[in-house]
Length: 298
Image 1 (cartoon, rainbow, N blue to C red):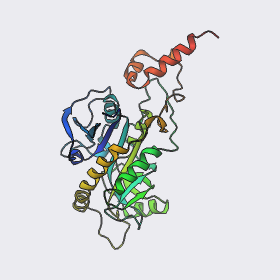
Image 2 (spheres, rainbow, N blue to C red; image 1 turned 120 degrees about the horizontal axis):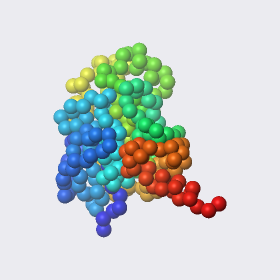
Image 3 (cartoon, rainbow, N blue to C red; image 1 turned 90 degrees about the vertical axis):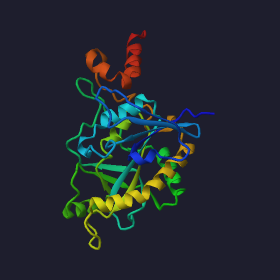
Image 4 (tube, rainbow, N blue to C red; image 1 turned 30 degrees about the vertical axis):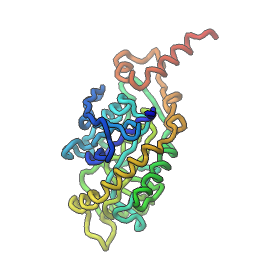
């Protein structure tokens, strides 16, 4: 029996080379924000549909600050995603998180400055709750699946997101450590924020590749060093995703479910048709509910 769940994965292009993935096809998706990073690879595993989108595009051609995160999340939503898992290479800011370890992040600090971080603009205002930025149920399942890959897994941790594409200075790295950050990366934001606006349960599997540049006994982080550790982790990440397919929690129990119900502030009569049509894929049912409530007898 096929599952109603659709697991969407944002990460490297090698992740969809999972043993047993069937009916594989590539799909181009149009969104009101332009095309996503690349064609989306779709397939099925154990009766569950999987969709994979490489954030940086095939060949790693899009830098982190130029990824169209809105187009990516919108495309996954339009393809019917019920759960979203991000897979990201990160630098470790803690001695106990060694290169090669996995971290299932549960908090974020967003230091990005050059990215479009919301779907709500041009006359529509929405404020979603984001105190708990990941879905607890999906994160717990992801951590369990990651442990089955044989990797050391840290359940919980704070991800500080910087614009990049440069790595940190040593002073910055030491500052983030003093704040109590766990890992550092360049891609989780605004991805997690937009997933919440899209009411999609989101969890992040962070693959520690280095000690950033704070660790005095380690060399400064380089692309070669990152790639070497990352390549060794790809098989374990694929194993994790394959195990997660059979452990996906009920999305209706997620903190993301109904996140927009009380978030849209704009009076329906003040929403211009153009702005509404751009977000119909996201807010149509809430606008309809608002219309019905206003037309109901008092």
